[in-house]
Each structure stands twice: as C-alpha cells, then as structure tokens.
Amino acid sequence: MIASIIEYQKAREELQSLEVQLAQTMKAHPLGSKRFTKVGFRKMIVRLHEELAHFEHSEEARHPATPSQRT
Image: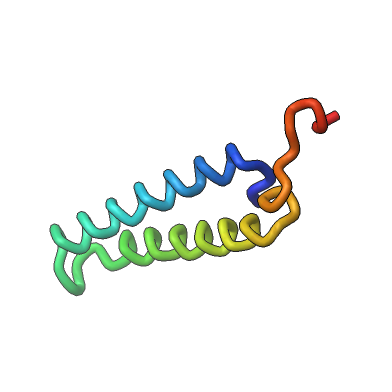
C-alpha cells in the first residue's frame, strides 16, 4: 500500500508508464495476439488505480506529515 506522497508520485508515474506500454502493445499486436501480456498490464493498472484511490482518501493525503513530524 502507498504510505507517503513520494510513494504516491512513484505509483502515478508507474501507472502512466504501464498505460503507455499497454497502448503500444495493443497497437503492435491486434486482437488475439499477446493476450496474456495485455491482461497483465490491465491487472497492474487496476491494482495501481485501487492503491492510488485508497491513498487519496487517506489521512496522509489530506494532511501530509512534515519531516519533523515523522518520528
């Protein structure tokens, strides 16, 4: 699970990268081809969307701790 703003930002970047890779795979390999790869991309994208949504509704997202508060 995402526990900080930094992890959240990394997850957003990973999500964007996966979406680009899925689009490229779908363009290069039409229906019926590379099916398992596409399913894998979609599963990872769904997982990241769920984690991002969970974090966005968390207390850390609403009130990020400053470095001095993390002791």
